[in-house]
Length: 242
Ligand SMILES: [Zn+2]
Image (cartoon, rainbow, N blue to C red):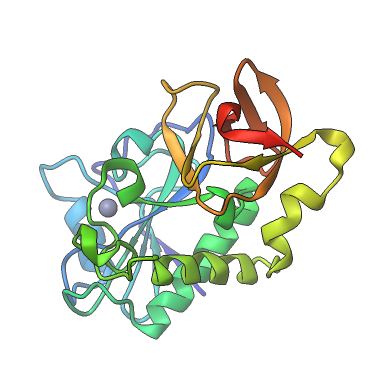
């Protein structure tokens, strides 16, 4: 995967993020458009829109804004996410194989750089932040997207990113298995538990735990525990100690 830097001179706020707790994935919602065409749109439109990266139809990757800096892509999550826009050939939103391969590789590279776990809230959809159908291929059909009811495309993508990081299946249990002395373990009891960037509901949602799995908490503040994976904080009222 080659990354071409074509930095924006417009719609680039030049703000260094204080924290990066997730990678946010998008689709461009403009079938057949190229990565460079989307980059040029960001650089000229009067709308305040931009993205850190765009993955193109041939698998090419353009960096529009260095990933340490904020982009205007994911609404309330801009301050804590790196954004990736993804090109697609048609309105189903399905990604071509070259595009998909680069998207997986880029996401894995960024997860490694920022110490994020794709299957524990480290990779999110625009949909997770605002409910927008974005990226369409990763949003269930019942919500207007092209994914299955149980999110098969999205779950496969998260697995593919984990595998690309070299974590594979072991990654799913890594937070619980690693160094229990550094924290304590809890089992999530809720069907869907939000991960937030801080210890309270006033902090933005950065992910969601849906596997009722066992997670390691390394810091506790009131009802809230910080995940060892670095994904963020969860409310311990929806967990039990194991
Ligand atoms: Zn989006």
